[in-house]
Image (cartoon, rainbow, N blue to C red; front, side, top):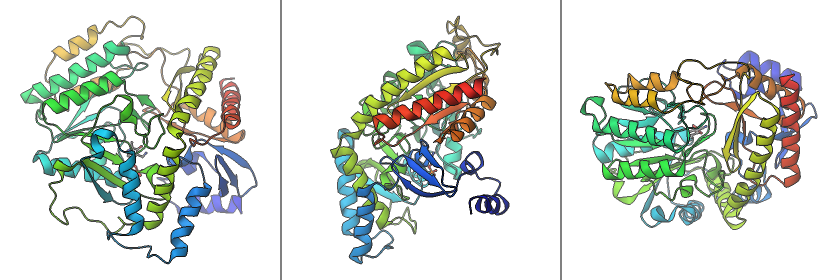
Length: 468
Ligand code: PMP
């Protein structure tokens, strides 16, 4: 069955298949961290539905919540009508929201994916401000529909100013740390202060508190606070895309809580549906300028997803799984950093909570021109900041193509080899980052200490085998 299914899938499905290419497995059973394939092999799943499975596969409380709805005879499809199931979900969701938002929040159900909620958020701030421009960040990932694509990655778009996202390892300014973040902040300010930038009065700023698909890059808390100040001072709504970082993943229930900021809009999906499709935008009630029916959609009332989501949110909250993610995550980061000491091909280890990235590099390689990451003093950045024009078309290329701050070039082949070696050892990991050179770990927040140790051991073996 195993081989036949894989063969038919690759013959009949689109060439755009993503995960299935690198992970030729046929899951037939799963529980917690473990997936069992049709070939009888068992795997530790650190992909977790791209960060969706906060409680792992088929957690009993999630299954119970779904069964309860099925057994109750409640309708499974209700468009966006009021139901007890939805009422319970919204109550639990509001219970978890950052305090600054909880008392004045509105929720809009979108459906059914993260990208739909991103679209809704962009449309909301454009409607509320009457403006179109957008501030987004290098390396961002917000989804695959048109508006979300505009806000993601590198695609040039006249309405989008692409701003540098601060990072230590591949700092666009070659300095990293607080100075790199400060230069990134100045860049943002200069775009907003420049009438020629094309977006001096944008409709909003959208950011991920930790970039996930971009290669697991946690934003510094101080920078997050600066972005909040800058946007607040200019009445620009700040949209936090917490599709991947939400529900305890980073060691706080919502990742914005690390910096203590209150965004105007939060985009939520993945874990909030307890493994079923569910996506919402939550926003300050004074932004709720929509006319009735201004945002519609057939699949905004998934009762099973809401029930599974209510159970998940409550379980994470009651069992303090965010704190658990913080503790286990920092232990795993420490272990991985000492592994990096042994293997020069591990260029960087970073993350927050149980959102962890290990970047594979060519240890012998040279990144060239814009600095080697040891001598940068920000001079290049100051020169760039002083140069004009600072518009969405010109500056991003400079920022993104520089590898300043990176001691070594990314090594996507080595990362793919590590992923293959992991799979051979029964460990499922995902690759991410601009160069697909970052091994990403997104285990369930319920992972046991023994399982975490097994994940580390298998990954360490895989790196050793791949680096040989
Ligand atoms: N935003 C972020 C931060 C994400 O990580 C993702 C998915 N990886 C999305 C949006 C899009 O979600 P979906 O794939 O459900 O459309």
